[in-house]
Image 1 (cartoon, protein in one colour):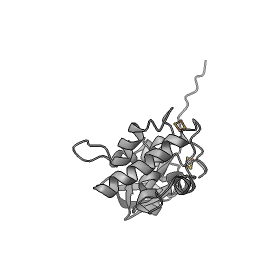
Image 2 (image 1 turned 180 degrees about the vertical axis):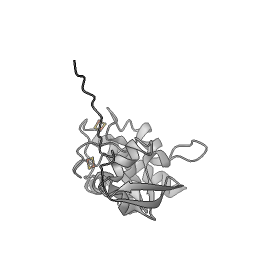
Image 3 (image 1 turned 90 degrees about the vertical axis):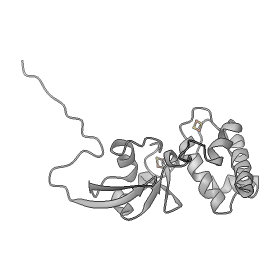
Length: 176
Ligand code: FES
Ligand code: FES
């Protein structure tokens, strides 16, 4: 009896004849040189090749914010960013926020202190987005935080706690 073998061809599996580029980027402070097809998203590369699964794949079309990372300090949807666009740029994922000695970033600590998550699926994106929201000067009051965090959906509806955490983290960061 003939047997069939199936090969998994995930989003970053190499296609025959595909155009590849070699690029160098910095991820969480570490320089990496990679050879990659044009079509590979930053999100797929992070999760499937770089071993960084913090950024989550929710919608994969820019609607939920679960994949949010910082690129040169700006929050971006990794699902809508091709890896080749990151050549020469600095990418920060949630794994890169804590200090080298393990001390959590003030936003991470505030999320814990305010119980700002339930299932946690959206949390890495919320935390990264909150870091940028604070750095942008948008963590001034509840309504402003809600507006500037509106690209990050939480299906558990932990919005009151998330908003409180962002405002608290902003205060903590102003004191340091
Ligand atoms: S997975 Fe990127 S915005 Fe939803
Ligand atoms: S904590 Fe579950 S989706 Fe936000």
